[in-house]
Length: 157
Image 1 (spheres, one colour):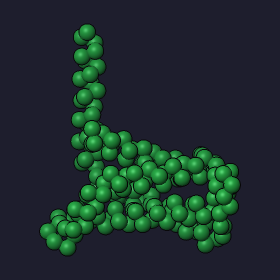
Image 2 (cartoon, rainbow, N blue to C red; image 1 turned 180 degrees about the vertical axis):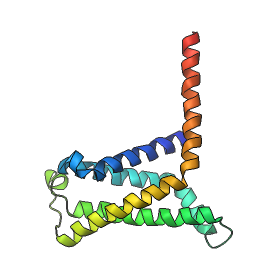
Image 3 (cartoon, rainbow, N blue to C red; image 1 turned 90 degrees about the vertical axis):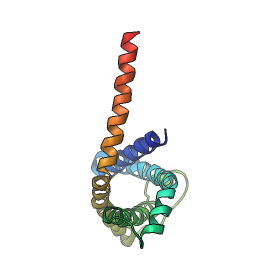
């Protein structure tokens, strides 16, 4: 059950980020609301994976395999730039926050930080997915077999 939750949350985050990064596709208002939801989902993701963070961080200076060490560095960078991206997005909001009565700060520094952190996030998300590819395929196949098995059972009845 936990693996399914992880898989679907990760896929949702990937789709949400891809949509949100396509600013011309979503427009400003939808872009900002997706970004706020993405920030909340990111916190849920970190909470669910906190055991991995603690376990891997405690082993980082010890006997951690090279691939896991690289993944830890990529994930740390990803958390930092995504945090900057979401925070700067909140600070420059022109639609979502004003709609609920909050007037955020604005300025070229925050806009530049938001754009740059989003671009760096794209690269790090690509690395994160590449480093997790084996897990993605394994879980995807396992879930696909369950669905196919259920469909076969239903057609026999």
